Image: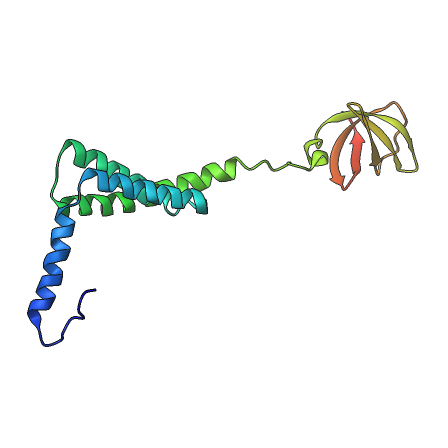
Length: 167
């Protein structure tokens, strides 16, 4: 176990800093790959995309360091710059993709029927039934409609469809 640093001994601080600089100078491309993999695994566990960009930056830094060896200062600077750039541009892009990919009518079959046309099976006093595909739905309308008439679905309230005369 390392001895605690003495406040009066400046050489102990120098030894620590020298050890840190030696460790940083020993960073090689495979270390960046391992860091990228660790960050990617942590990202997959969290699913937040917060760690995705540092992981990608570590992979790019490893690739560049593999083909064009750089000093550790340049590698850390490259990594930091890539994290900032990838986060600034990638995060909004992924958020947009996630928003577009949301299935808005998932588990709401009635919502998907709005705008569809159907035939009234029975109807009186503003309430009746409409056949959509092979399913009968309860229907309501403020218009006077007759059975067999073509209607357009304009709204849904639970399992009840609001309909109007089709044009």
